[in-house]
Image 1: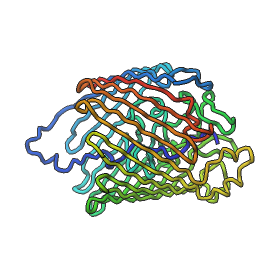
Image 2: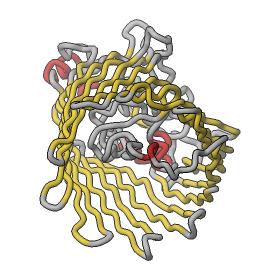
Image 3: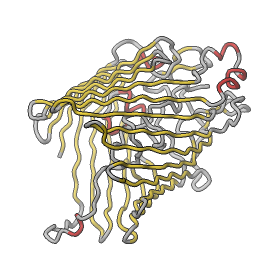
Image 4: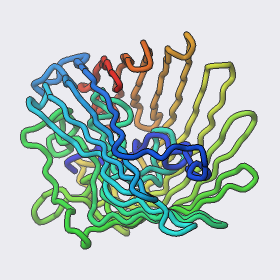
Length: 429
């Protein structure tokens, strides 16, 4: 299969408290609030550079990021609705040229006393994991995440209609009129392991999968039902759409494509021993029902358990264990050639993560370390970072993306030559 990066467990920034964690209940009733008229504009300018920590024989560039970026965000009240626009433009020294990205362009408001609606381009996320995504199957940008851009760019935008109904059980329904894939590694900026070539490769040629862009015909649906009872949040999830990675290959043309994917899941999160604990599970029903087609994804169970606590003031610790269980693993091995069998994933993939965050100097300085370690794959991914707030407007961030492991074809080890250190300076306005 052309790209192993396909849907492994790195699927989300933490959705610790739902979509954005901010309820607007009550704010609209403030009689002293002054209604804003016209557009309200804000944003930032940012310079970023991320040199590689070693030469990459597959990529002829010493940097994974070298850019000057500006983001403009605007918001305007239109009666009971709010219009939002957010767009980025940047000069890219790696891909050489100007680039742009419309991240949000939507209208949101109250459709009925119990129903909210948001339609247009938006960023959606849910689930309980911290940088581990099970039921959050909305698009992600792993190129930005691994190359040294800000964490907020891991969440990629999608065109969608989202309805939220609030009652005894709250319900979110999302319809995406056409499939939006992840911004996956194509080989242009970051190298990856190719099973066909038996080594790490990069563009050219870049990965060029068959698109799923037919409006209506390639639409996707996502559902979340949730409620909090006695301080414990319970949620159920469903999704019907496509794998966000080009994880399948057409046997006739050999071209990669985004296979069908249906999933069901559940989660629970609540206080425990002075911290917050969470459990989440998801069942992925792939295109290959019996595991005998190695070019299409097999069914999988995924499980996640996490715990976050603050043992001392300004110090936060987070721990997670994740399990991915391939359902028809024996059949998958039987279908592979002897040459390809060495690259086959284990039946059980175990992943441990740890987040350490400390704040000091009146919370102007934040030091953090996020660690991924897979004992089954024998690989790791370390993300140490320091952020300093010079003023309310100026912030500097320095960090490292360090990949490594035993076998070149495992999820994190294949990115070893993309290890980088980055520096970003942002001015908000």
